[in-house]
Length: 381
Image 1: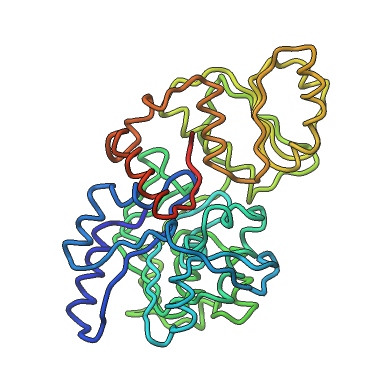
Image 2: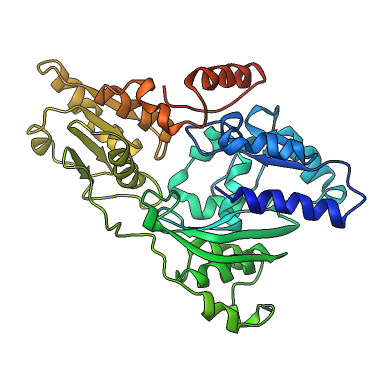
């Protein structure tokens, strides 16, 4: 998550430097599995924003309108928050859109900076749509949404992102990176974390959205500062092991790095939060049913490839064996995976209260309120 200090300081700078704005909105659509009213509870962020005279905007509660992105992946009309259509498309010349991502490596998208951050403009269902083509998808978003300014929070970075599962994965950098061209900004950001040839940055440059040639990018005060601050982050070969109780069976024919493989990191994280019972997790294409016969489950079958290939097998096996199977049809649906994990391991919602920014009662109240306001989000059940 972007540093609250950076976010609040940005509001203050705008208020000092500009006298012709009517309203400052702070907006986002949280990662699948949460909702914005809950996110703004973290360290009372919502209250702090309001205290400065700005307004939190819960994009997951906004009315929708379908638009055409004319994209390779976003190849059909996609619902987006109507308020974005009105202010960042119809009246884009009357408004300023500042994009404030945090600098992180990303095990699916290689890095998440300005371009990838715009996935937060979509509702949960659309975030999950064709997630295995995330590189092309986030560039498709640029067909419609292009920030006026990008301000990257590199005060601290995250290794093996998107989440810092372990404290040592968070590294101080003490930098802010800013610019009008999101492709150039991301090129600088990726250089600083030592990750080259990021696919979505290259695609964005090929489609004419900006410059990704480091030599052609003007850097202030000079290019020398880049090597002074450069570190090495990673987006593959996670150095932590899965809990011993978890067996992951990956397809031998196909495994999408940009989709189902996120489950490895998710189970490593769950293992730091709770003692996990035994479970077999299956994703990708190309599985040997004879190998599956050796396991009693419970089974979590994730992604369209694995579900299509193995559903008949498990249905037939269920007729003779008392097995527990959870199917998740999307490549990446953290809410559904979290629900399956909770049920498979017998974890009560009350056992998860330490992960919440407020009491479980308040979470329930906020969720009901958000749904009454039209909330469109997926949560762990």
